Image 1 (cartoon, rainbow, N blue to C red):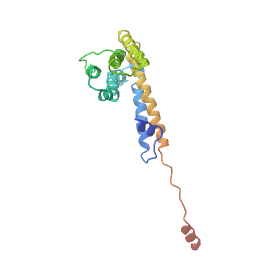
Image 2 (image 1 turned 30 degrees about the vertical axis):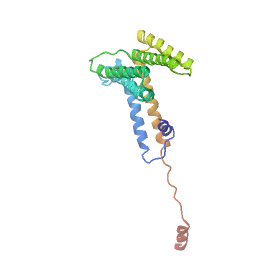
Image 3 (image 1 turned 90 degrees about the horizontal axis):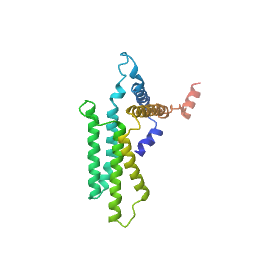
Length: 216
């Protein structure tokens, strides 16, 4: 991940620099098309509801990224015990929610709004950490960090609040996604200029100069 960001902010010179422009323009166009501002347009705007239709897919993608990049590593590093079982339950539950977000596209099931899903994820993480703090204190001489226990309690409390009374709508999530796409597209467009190789300078050799003098 660190190498990816290094290449993103300082691209290497390449003859394929024009690909940065192509993908940058495509992302910028995609961000414009997915904006929720087109909802009130007429029938001429065939893409007016594209953004609202992919919100559930965005949520599913975020959940999958969380499961793969964070929670899976937690599972691999945990030793067998109650905390690992709870982490597995958390993993399966959020995986089912991600699947439900995909199925919601076909109106098969309704898994709730983005804010409720975010609240559920916070509650699960906080609950598992509270159990980990309890078993850590009873099975280890080392003290569990009190600040992380406070964070876990905040996760549980705030997660319940978000699930019961959502603070933001799905449209807000779509706007965040659109802004990120636009910023990424602009960044790729700028990288196109940075990745453009410098033109080769013509170097006149000494022998060439001598031959030109003789010809004169």
